[in-house]
Length: 341
Image 1: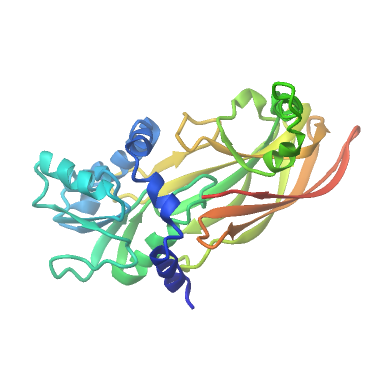
Image 2: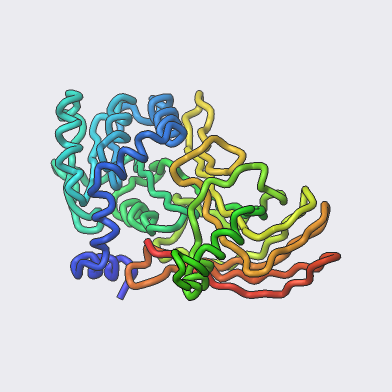
C-alpha cells in the first residue's frame, strides 16, 4: 500500500483524531496568530510578492482560520482554495465573509488527500501552507503538501515556503539535575521511575543564547519542489565546534524555512534559531544522560537519525550516537528519543 493510501486509511479509522482535535481548538490557532515572527514572514512573502500572486490560482493546505488565504487574496490572486479538515473550516468561512473575500476565497472542508477542487478547477499555480512542526518534521503535514503538489500544482508552480533546513547545536541546561531529582520525592512519594521516560522524550523549550556552547551544524534539508512524497527519515553525521568552555547536557534542534520571491523582491526566511526572535515552535531539546565537560575548540561528533513513530507517523523517533574525547570526559553513547504528534 502506498504512503498516500495509508494516510487516507488511517484517517478513516480515526487514528489521527487526537492530532486533528488539537487543531480544532481556538487556543491553538490563537497561539499561532500571536506569533508575530511567523505572521510577518508569511505576510511579507505573500503580500510583498504581488508579481507572483497576481491573477493566480492558489491552494492553501491546512488553512486554519484562513489568514494565509486572505493574504493571497490581498496579493491579487484570482482564486484561493482554502482546504481545512477540522471544524475551524466553518469559522474560516465566516472570517472570509466578514472580510468581503468570499468571491475570491473558497473554503473546502476535508482532508486534502480526499477532497476535489471546486468550480471545475484542475490545476493551481501556487501552494501556500504552514506545514512545519517542531524539529521541522513532526506532525508529517509536509506529506499533505507534497500530495497536493503532485496532484494539482501546475508545471513551474511555486510552493511557499519552498525549502526547510534543520540545524543542531550543543547547550547547557542549568535546571536539568533539578528537574530529574524532582521525581525522587514528590510530597514524600518516590516517583523515580518517571525519570527514564522523562529523559527519553524530546522537549519543546525556549533556549536562551547564554546556554549555547557550540556553533550550529546543518542536519537535513527538504526542497518541496522536488522531494518525493514519502515518510521523512534520514541519518546525518554532525560535528559541533565548542565556542565556550562549559558543560553540554543537551542538544538543540531548530529549523528555518525559505520562501521563493519574485524578481523585484527579496526572499524571506523564517528562522526558529535561539539567536532569532521567539516563535511558538521554540526549539526541540534532546537531553543527554551523561554531561560533556568541554573546552573551547573541542569537537563533539555524532550521528542523528529521525524516523516516523507510531501508525500515524506524526511523531518522530530520534536516534542519537555521540562521540566525544575531552580532558575530563570520554563518551561513546547511543540514546533513543520518542515524541508523540
